[in-house]
Image (cartoon, rainbow, N blue to C red):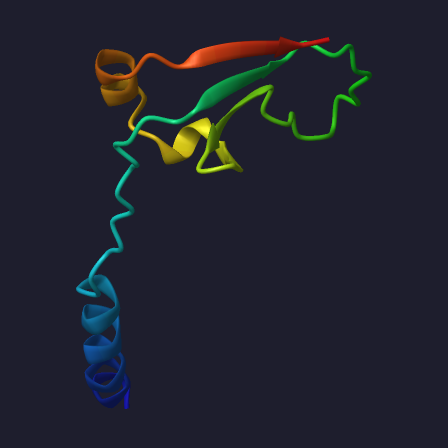
Length: 84
């Protein structure tokens, strides 16, 4: 009985392990502007921190994590706006 169970489950485990992983490519393009939020906030210790900086890219807000920041630093001159 155990051998039958192992024979049935083993292919499922192997197939799950060999599934292709999705690779998300980082943007390598120059954003128009970087917004740095310096507004005072009250944060609860048990809530997640929201990002305090983000890019404007093609007229829309895009998170820094979407970009290859090393590439942007080397290849772009991005205007930084600080908001209070």
